[in-house]
Amino acid sequence: MSITVEARYKEQQLVLETPLNLPEGQRVRVTIEPVDEPSWGQRTIAQWEQAGVIGAWAHRKPKTSSAVWARQLRTKASRRQR
Image (tube, rainbow, N blue to C red; front, side, top):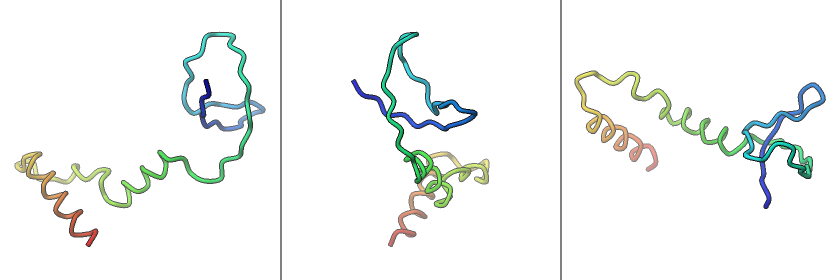
């Protein structure tokens, strides 16, 4: 079994960014590979922020139904890609 996780080196310790589901005391082998680029999750969030997806619902009119608002967003997004 192989698991890939990202970690940060802080105060002479590796701090995992996600918890592992391993038994207490489990021996593991660690291979260090520097990560110079943002993780997949960080890139996705940056793309969503740039596209205006994050926080898009905060400014909708209260009388607009969620279905109508979502349709408007899809229409707006499809026009942007052309």
